[in-house]
Amino acid sequence: MHPDFRNGVRAALPLLLGVVPFALVSGVAAVGAGLTLVEAMGLSVVVFAGASQLAVLELLGQNAPLAVVILTAAVINVRMVMYSASIAPYFRPLRRRWKVLLAYLLTDQAYALSIAEYARTDDTDRRWYYFGIAVTIWVVWQLATVAGIALGANVPDRWGLQFAVPLVFLTLLVMALKDRETVAAGVVGGGVAVAGAGLPLNLGLVVGALAGVATGVLVERRADR
Amino acid sequence: MTTRYGPAAIWAVVVVVGAVTFAYRYSFIYLFGRIDAVPPNLKAALRFVPPAVLAALVLPSLVTVGPTPAATLTDDRLLAGVVAGVVAWHTENMLATIAVGMGALWTLRFLL
Image 1 (cartoon, each protein chain N blue to C red):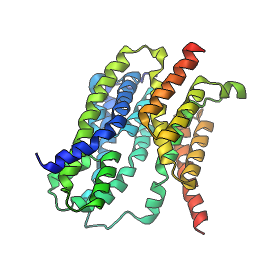
Image 2: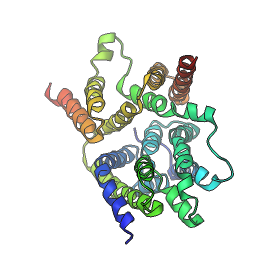
Image 3: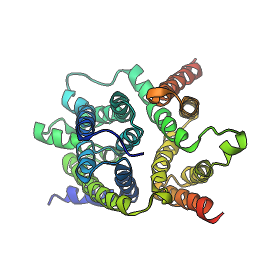
């Protein structure tokens, strides 16, 4: 085993405190939305991006139009393009097969940890360190999702376990609020979504998200002037 | 909140969302050398996607506009959400936020 693979696995361990509850919640949410075990694991393995999985489950549960389900997930995951652009130079010498594998395993956590390590030192093997982190997260994510499915199937509805879904989003939201501009984007995005909650086709979510992004851009432009 | 969609629709969503997500992840890892970077305007806008989308997802599940302002503000999900929000703000810890938020919801629902 490559020593930097082992270092990557070790670096990922503290992150699992965040990965495990997130995956448990997505398992619970899959049961809540009425997915079978195979469908739920299909979502978890094929998509492997937690926030978008939760949004898909939430919207399927509300019987939202499929276009809205897909569009919402696509918007949530678009940040992966930034990660891909940022980490791409480090993967340049690799064979295509490795690039495909490492791309599939790209997550917020694997990206953030690897970029920090690459910036710190040139001595760490790019591929093996990243792979150690990413594959650890993948394995634990899938196992905890199965556990969440079992949990969701056995805990009565009135416990409101589904409430853990907005709590996960809430944590991610608070972490995304970094400055005046992002707070403005969040306040407008959330406010418009609440006001538009009664609209058909889950338009409140789509309009709220667009209004929030537009607000952030406008506030930033004004500050630059 | 069980979906009325059948297996075909669910699998279609899984495959399309999976393909789009993989395309994002692979995009620049594949393209590197052909284009240099993300266009700056797009990059500036992408920064606001997480706060805007997450707020648009989370607030409607905590706030349901009720018949009176009092009914809106005393909804157990909103109160539990505020408590959890404070914890999230101070700790940025998902496990702690879930634990405190669920505990607050159960306290409001079963004990008070």
